[in-house]
Amino acid sequence: MDVNLASDIAALKRLTVLELRLRYAELFGDPTRAGNKPWLVKRIAWRLQALAEGDLSERARRRAAELANDADLRRSPPREAGTRRRRRAPVLPGPATTRCRDVRLPRPGTVLTRSYREQLLRVTVLTEGFEFDGHIYPSLSAVAKVITGAHYNGFLFFRLRRTGGRR
Image 1 (cartoon, rainbow, N blue to C red):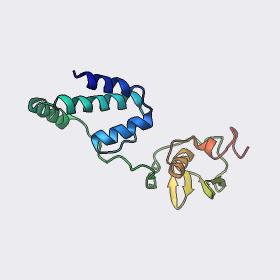
Image 2 (cartoon, rainbow, N blue to C red):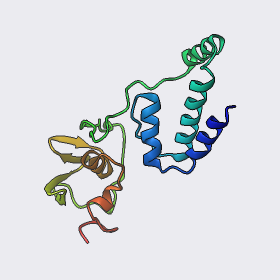
Image 3 (cartoon, one colour):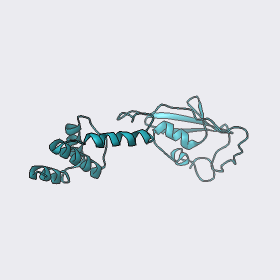
Image 4 (cartoon, one colour):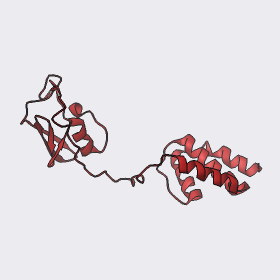
């Protein structure tokens, strides 16, 4: 290995994640949202070596293609930075499913309100689920996920006590 290449690779460990992301974009021609420093260091080091000493052999490329054909690949591309997922109304369980009512929930017909990001949100408690924005959801957590785009405990998000109702 070239002395300059070895020193370049050693210097990667001293860079911040932001600097590594910039270096990654410079070498790969594509930005990354990765924040895992060890992964970024490995990928950039591999790319530096590939550029300095040559890329994969044709035999290695064929083998990688064979392995990729057998792998389970993701069916959708990764989300763009800063975008939110579309709201989808989940399907509630059918009448054959019996569910015990959670004691933390208010009575059906109660409207839960919550201010979130300068919006007043209203969720209606139903006998089987929750109505929000014209869609029916099976749980408060599902509603909280649609609102925030992240996994939240619905009872905590809507500030419900252990025995039902508000705090």
